[in-house]
Picture 1 (tube, rainbow, N blue to C red):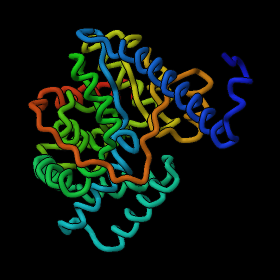
Picture 2 (cartoon, rainbow, N blue to C red):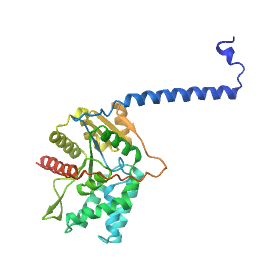
Picture 3 (cartoon, helix red, strand yellow):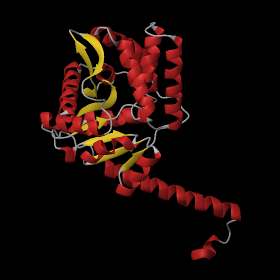
Picture 4 (cartoon, rainbow, N blue to C red):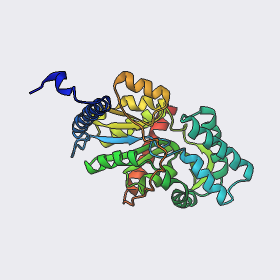
Length: 302
């Protein structure tokens, strides 16, 4: 019986190449199975001290929620064509660059605040439901949605944490069947928007403050919690938890994640994101999320 290299002497160069490819495929498959088996232990089923926190823009959903909301408001004649052009440019830049530009985001927030000033909170919530169906549902990343569902299936609460208006974030969280949302709180008096914010936008370090405040209120152990984001601006939030994930990461976050051996996921492909919108009775959790965000912003302002 031939052994070693002699046993392979009958192979043509093409067959040797095919064999090498088969070995590589086998090794890759084994490694993927090994990693998969390791990750099956997380999230831990029934761990009531754990929860998951998901950034929204470009993590759960393609693009920025605020820009999609602006499109919906324009359709309803809340503002003029020149304002829509600015929203469209900002959204195009955001999707191409894949990062949050502070000036663009501030301009978008200022525009949104001026647009909703004088309108009732209840009116914007109702419109938000319609806008979700029109512009947002089909932009949900299926991969990230599956991660959120894994936490829900394990009996854990799942929260959105976003700089988008809390009312819009609550709509998205409820439609995805999540527990609730932490978002930027716009000031209102007697149910009418004043055009001002309560504190500051829920962005960067403010997100970490909101998560910390919510964890304290819910009795969570942050070392057992998970957080997911695409942006280096969310490193403070990701650093709070024991299980940080970089999802569709920008260049700075990717480098940081690799240095600290954080888990990476990238769902950006040429395929259109699946339309996702699972109804759930999570209204109470969404309201609680908004309250916690307001508390965190108030503390930070002080």
